[in-house]
Amino acid sequence: MWVKAPNINCTHGFSTREGGVSAGAFQSLNLGGSEDEAQNILKNRSLALAELGLKLDDLCNLKQVHGVEVKNAIIGQQEGDALVTNEPGLILAVSAADCFPILFFDEENVVVAAAHAGWRGTAARLVEKTIDAMLKLGAEVDHIKVAIGQGICKTHFEVGPEVTEEFRQEGFPEQFLSDNKIDLAGCNRFVLLDNGIHKQNIWTMNRCTFDPEFFSHRRDKGHTGRMWGVISLK
Image (tube, rainbow, N blue to C red; front, side, top):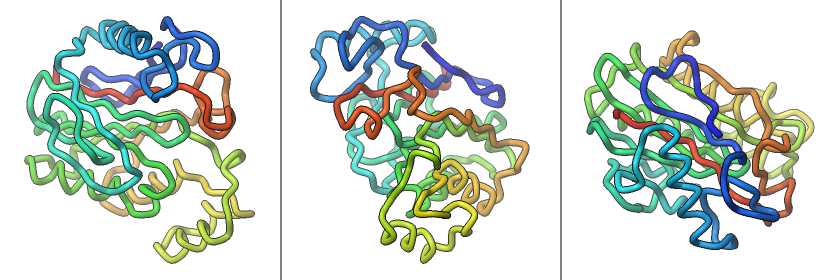
């Protein structure tokens, strides 16, 4: 149900598609989208959060728009693509089905964040803006640890030349952009390092959402479920 990062020492996880009640294309732990039965999504969310010792009443999530806006977390839904807080008890959740869920934790200064990085957010350096938002709440770059969850791998993420050119214009190295295929995990790691996050403080799951354990929007031609990246100062 949950994959956890060894470098994040607070309540957190990246969900798989296993352990829920949904059927068909959404089997079984679908945590979002608009095609599955609403009661199934709600039940799945309750089951998944309970596995982490969390309650749905404390959920902070997003209407994600593939942008770069970072919101201070409040209970309920906001529009944006990343959440940040230093408030204990709040649950920060980002949704994904090829885009990368990325979790941040400064244990020393007690600040957490969660970001949803698709190709647009990656190209626009959403993780940099997330770090900046953490610093405003008292975090320090030296203490921030980051976990990059499952997402579409370079092998399966072929794009048009205009997309790779956009990444070039934003200063991403060619090693991430060859043959009109983009290594989004590598690009986000590059931005993290460029912003002073220590190499030893970054963990990457290195799992592709084309694997059957996960939901994938591209693999399933848009008819699929959603996974979450979750973090909380419980």
